[in-house]
Length: 322
View 1 (cartoon, helix red, strand yellow):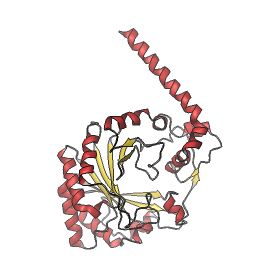
View 2 (spheres, helix red, strand yellow):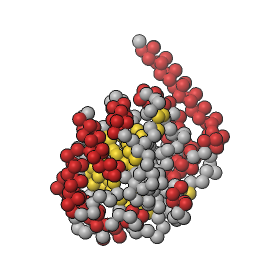
View 3 (spheres, helix red, strand yellow):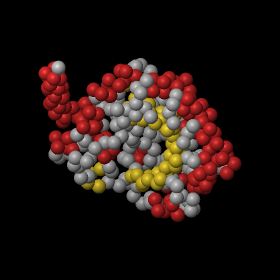
View 4 (cartoon, one colour):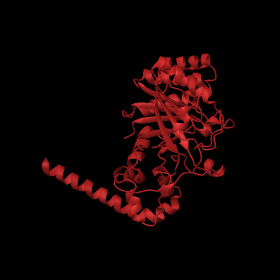
């Protein structure tokens, strides 16, 4: 079930972080228009399952007024959980920080996802983050600050030491940088380990309706979400009902949701599980479509047959009950 709508509103960013999962930078110009975004929102809400909406990118607050207009539009449709991911480039002074936070709060945005690590601080001064954290309690925002790690970079405790004392109301998270193209091209040494794959190794991110500026739709908003095997349509060419059907019939999604990564690893025991995390493992499994079907194609057909037989059994039981 898709209950989280995320609009990757733009690929333009004020920064050019070396670990950016989508390679965003100031030179990129892909973005949605307000009209497109409203159409996507209207379509998504007809699913009657969406209860959270987030704006991401890129840096969505390069288009502050547009995001505020869209947030007001979303809350007018009955959605109260609206958030935005931002690098905080706009918080250069206390006055400007208060101005932006006021606009965001009045628009209905209630959650801010911020980044504070060596890669972002190359472009965004830590004082910007301090300004946001100092003023955010006035507006009752929920705040999550994430720290991206690679070998030799600052850990969460190092970052906390630079943020002052006003952090008790904030959620902090550490994540390892993923070996996406941007990371590999910048020769960043990611932190890997041999994963232990068991029944608990499941994906908890396949409940999203993630929409890119070009309308492409994926059920995940992780670093590797734009994968052909996970693609479930395009908002510009497919109806939301067609997208829902593609989501429900996508065997990769069904297997990941029902069986987790153990299903794939068991089918291919020599598979390399030396990875950053499960998202990295997912990319290793799915990134080459031809190789994927060469390895798992027959197993997927067997799984389809099992699902069909279970359906027939259920139908027989129901008919007998009547």
